[in-house]
Image (tube, rainbow, N blue to C red; front, top):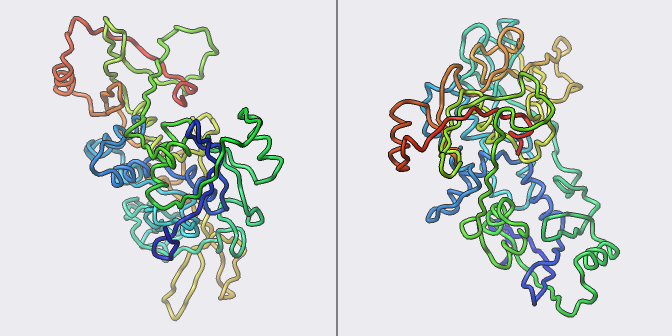
Length: 429
């Protein structure tokens, strides 16, 4: 496979155990490691449509994320707090998306360019000049839609120097990647330790092969991250995807008062009614409020790197702080631009950098003052939902409940209700 500008490829050297037919480790340049590290910055909601597009003729799954994504598609707009709520779940952005164009295989990334919008009155009203939004459906505190596009300028180069890496340092030219995707800078000592740790006393059964990686292999590797303990072997030797090797893992939730553990704080638990089959003891479906659905939908918007637990469950990088300044001025007409650089030199002596606040597009009041309108979830308050065991979500109704029982051929006398408390640590699992 030739490496061209139109069809770029990345060369990967694989050390293979011929007898076990598995990858011992791979050796690569920074281009492939940059691709691997970029995976952790992807929101899950962007992965599902990529997989569906790539495997048009097959039913590919990533755990239950397909069902969660399909639920967002099917739920009517009237159940979401704002129009932006549904859009940001179906087309979640990434704060690292400016870096993706510097990757060698950048044709796998299909993120919309992030835009900044301000109120049309921002040049004439001081209050309207303090906020921006990434969605043109947000409302300014004055009541107008924030649909005035304003140009944004980032911090410039997003790599680590000319010709350098995107997510890794440019002075590291070669890396060793184990079959379970542990990445370290190549050295003779490292190679010997990896082989010894895997139980090899000699290299008689080991051979080296070279493979070229393009879009198709990257997508298969993506799937194997979620379904395999040996993703390099499955992606590049066996060429299996989740369509072939998907493993389902069911976790049971703890019933109320069932375990002796530290009591969670009042705001850190979610209660729902689980309808359980008496005979098999499995959860058939649950009825819940918007808080549990908000939690499930949040997983679509979060990148894999979001692991740090806070009081609000998880934390992600915050949107950048932009500063408004004048790029052109004549008579009473001025053109404005936004910059992340708080020390940017200004063209006009009378101009000044004005910091702007990113408003929460999920907020019904669309105000940056959280004491007035607290940051909320995606769904309207007071709505009840039905969640099946495989996490397909629909607004709750008598029709949906009876229809589900009929479809699954469940006897009414085989169903009992249990109250479930979901704690923060259980939600993370």
